Length: 223
Image 1 (cartoon, rainbow, N blue to C red):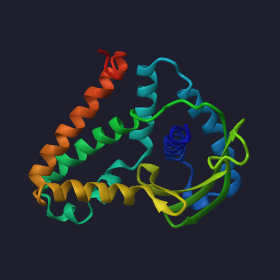
Image 2: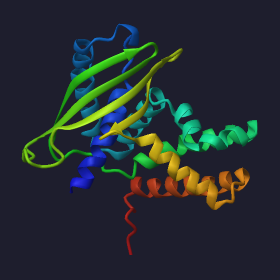
Image 3: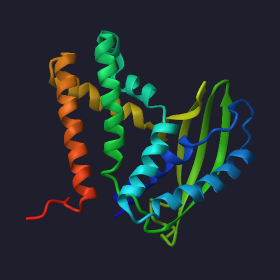
């Protein structure tokens, strides 16, 4: 149960802070707090939608609009990005976008407890911003390790607005953990990018197929 709550929190935070579009150069803690209260309620409304197809559509739009998927895609393959051809990079980025949209659908997308979200700090450095927030579950015992979690978010302001680039829990970077995963995947293909892209394509298609079964009410599989 605690693991499921944690996954809900991760998805909630990625989408919540990804939707932040204020001027990073003029960001204040008060402004961020007021924004979070407003957008947080709207996001929770999306999570409360019962129809799974509608919920997926709403969350997909948030991911595509407000998470810097191009940056994350390049970051997680690290040194291997430089050995990819232009065609391989394009194929990989398109697959990564589908991968990101597919992966979150495997997480629990509803909350057992009402969520309260408080901004503790908002620090701006040029086009980059780091926001620290605290999450509290109303009704969960105060001594539960899930209570009062502190999370840090890395934001970047580009020509298309501010998007989220990373999430840190207890100082651990989410995209660094994904880089380790992708390095293992590429190493399993002996560093051959063409093989990796083909295996990655098969993995993405498998995820998408499973998610389609979820929409049809056929997953988990019925005997």
